[in-house]
Amino acid sequence: MKHIITVSNLNKNYDSFQAVKGISFEVVEGEIFGLLGPNGAGKTTTLEIMETLREKTSGEVYINGFQVGKDDNEIKKIIGVQLQSAGYYPSLTLLELIELFAGLYCQSVNGLELLKKVGLQDKAHAKYKELSGGQKQRFSIATTLINKPLIVFLDEPTTGLDPQARRNLWDLIRNIRDEGTTVVITTHYMDEAEELCNRVAIVESGKIIALATPDQLIDDLIAKGFERKKEVKKANLEDVFLSLTGQEWRE
Image (tube, rainbow, N blue to C red):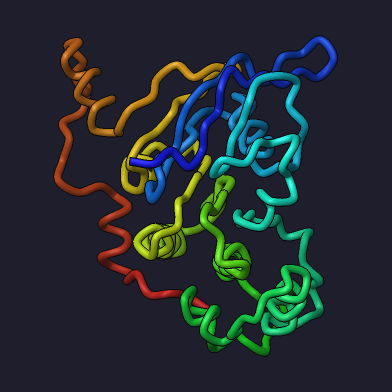
């Protein structure tokens, strides 16, 4: 079992405010690892430090043996980072954008095959600004795969999406993992983490307060005598919605 990411006693200060307070964890190669927590908990800051996008105050971070802060150029070659909408030229087509990013990475990429992976092959010649919210998110994930990364970082990839788009992205993230890529994801949707993640770290006020598999964390809570006030059913309202409306990719 190889630890592809190691974070040791990571701290990040903004003047007198301490956003990350001594966080430590490891990510196993080939897993989907989740950083969970409310807004402002420090999970995005932690992610950005691992991505080499933000400087740490202290501590150590290693990505596949390379040290963040010293080997950043080597790290950038082996990771895929999901860009926000502002990172794209809105008037370029999806194929043109893929060619642009492939050139930046010095990679040869079959743009249509990449778009097919995320169900956007029919939008190859559409401009980015013409896409729906779910399509933009799928395309942003496609761009993380251009340099054939060992690790993909996804920061709240399903925020604001409807149930179909959310479930589609879940399938896509699983497929990325199944093809051998390690995935690190931040989310504050607990059902998403329970469905996707092999292990999760729960972050609160800059500290990790729990780290285990979702099943283990749930079993530990039940062992303490926790009972839900409402009976748990075999399906939820989202399942009903998807059963009635379908789960195909929407255009």
